[in-house]
Image (cartoon, rainbow, N blue to C red):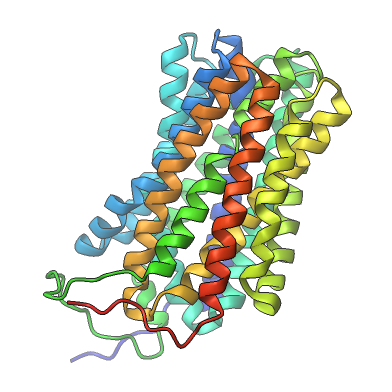
Amino acid sequence: MSEKRPPRLSAWRFVVTFGTVSLLADFVYEGARSVTGPVLALLGATGLVVGIVTGVGEAASLLLRLVSGPLADRTQRFWAWTIAGYAITVISVPLLGYASILWVACGLVILERVGKAIRGPSKDALLSYATAATGRGRGFAVHEAIDQFGAVIGPLVVAAVLAVTNTDYGPALAVLALPGVLALGLVVWLRARVPHPIDYEVDPKPHVSLTLPTERVRLPRAFWLYAAFTATTVLGFATFGIISFHIVEAGLLAPVWVPVLYAGVMVVDALAALATGWAYDRYGARVLFALPVVAASVPLFAFGSTAAAVIVGSLLWGMALGIQESTLRATVADLIPTRRRSTAYGVFAAVVGATTAGGGALAGALYDVSVPLLVAITIGVQAVAVVLLLVVTRSLRRPAEEPAHEQ
């Protein structure tokens, strides 16, 4: 039997290169997402349509992982799933700028999110192998930092092209094909250099059987309470598509400034994620009380009648998103034993995905009817979320309590 050959790239080079792939991909899809609302509005969409499309898109990026993740595990073709997901994004985004029919544009918005769902689990699996050598926390942190840089650059480039072309979304989104092709080329090159990233594992565990376990996994009551809190707070959270739709329809900012604002939102997102992630390690789940408070404040400003108000509201939206991305998932690990954690994260993704779709549709429908009603209902929903979180934090203060037994 031949000895295992070490990968041709160091673990850190693999992480940084993969981070660069993610940077280029974020350049593409975050650039497009910064103008989704205005693009759909230009084709005649209502607030309800924008809410449904952006909500369904976010739901697809989460719910479909329940399918793509197990399929990737079963086939072990992580690189193929990753490349396919990036290809879908690279194709769908430039086409969006030239879509002249509303339903086609809506389909492309959702298709881009499907690409993220297809590649997400496989990409994380590949990255996890290299971070075994670099350190899990440090490896993922460096990757995320590089990734977020693309989320800032993309919207700024779209804004620059819009300024030059007198707000023509075709060229503004077509230019994103270049970083998309570079991302595809780089990930294919990375696959050729490191076809088996599992070799980074110092002592990789043998492959486990893919047959279903005979035991029935039951998640503890505290998890379901936490899932209920998450569902409630996400349900009362509008998508940026609706906010940008309001900004353009109300004439508060010129379309060229919307992606610039979105770039600022991404900066706040990153800072909030870092701050609340650190605070969670120090203070625990109590930091999550900030989420419903910030989320309740978003519509008070984001759907206001002045440019200053919508800018503040958009930045608050970014803060809430940063808390969601950094801390909501961390708490699951404190609620679930290691052997049940994959199941719990799958269920959690489904909950977040379903309620994201519902929240987008709800916000869009209420926006078309009455902005004050939208604000009032959002505050009411977030108040319920606070009550549920109080129950969850009490459960977390009882670590000795044993979760439900498996049967």
